[in-house]
Length: 330
Image (cartoon, rainbow, N blue to C red; front, top):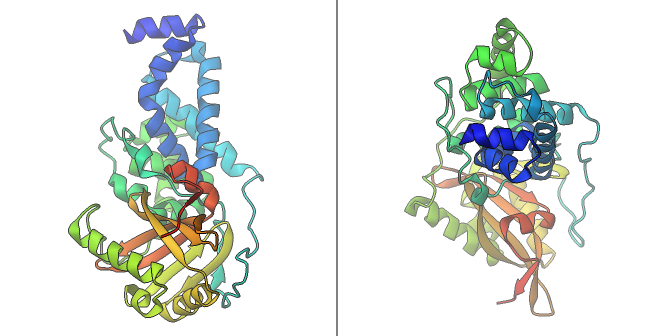
């Protein structure tokens, strides 16, 4: 069947090409997202991968699997995107009526976007190789994806292909047109340079423990109860808000930041979602017209029974999560 599809696709049959590539689309999209950190950039890279594969199908010799060949194209598309100067620039503070405290620092990864959990289904349909070191939940988390963005592009490619997907060193060398020694060296440097926060593991997705802390967060945020909110935070809690570069670290500073939001009279409705394997919420600002208008998406990072990070994204990401631009006020 696959051989017949390949013959038909090479003859210009678009339906046959789609049937050949469809089983790999989800995992390729997630692969591009890990490398690029942006949902939109990943979608662009995936479409460029499919176009390149369609145009270059005669060059597929079958020495490796079709999946591996597609990963080769996708990885190189992502490397080109990482090297381009067209990444999304930082955005100025744009919350009207709110004067935030001075941030701890200005972040670098302002192009970061969340990935909808609904699109993770089917992303790991093919068993990972023996070299894989990360579970899906770890390898799609915001912390992991953010950490990848500050590594050199080649190191990112090698680490994702080896440690996340489990390709062998020889396979990665062929994918990247380099030597096994070069792959081993890049992987060693990438592992040494990867900076991931350590701490308590989050509760299992959908567990009663996760539900409990999420419910407390929703109540505190919707009621603008800063004390209740701060009681949920770890001492080293981290707040970021790409594409705005402002980053806040520590309970005291995060308290002041949240107080500035609520002190301006802003009140919210939260609609549950999931992003990057983590609890998330569409945040809707209550309006005087009785309608709550989409203000952004919050993604929580949990550690034990506390919140260790909160990332706020622009309201432009809401449609990717099937969330409306506005909801009726309560």
